[in-house]
Amino acid sequence: MPNPRNAPTEVFLAILIGAAGGLAFVLMGLVQWQVEDDSSWVRFPVVVAVLELLAVAGLVARPRPARLIAAFVFGLVALIHLLAVLNQGPVWLRVLSGLLSAVHVFAVVMLNTKPARIHFLGGQR
Image (tube, rainbow, N blue to C red):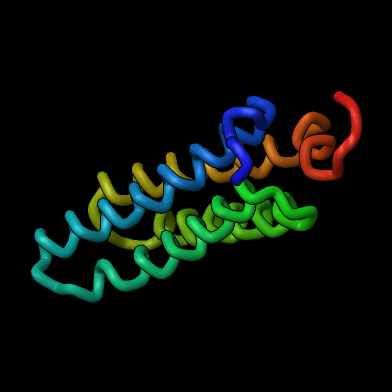
């Protein structure tokens, strides 16, 4: 199994953001579930987290299309968080969604840098 620590810093940051972002979204859903006593708050975050963790697993396994797929998934998750920011709800939920959206856009940018492209396409650094 490839070691993600051998990856460039950009790829390692994207892996870290993907894993932490998915788990933070589930944590937000769990807190909101406890506040409103409605289990539907946790269903969608779990689906998004599974999708995000699959993209992270692809980045760790390092197949050729993993970078593009992860960038697409992270961009989609950023849009989901932007919708949560524009929606009605508690201020803390909207602020955290805005932060998670910005961090996921940063991960997309990190996956589009030259070291990340070289890492996934092969070649000399």
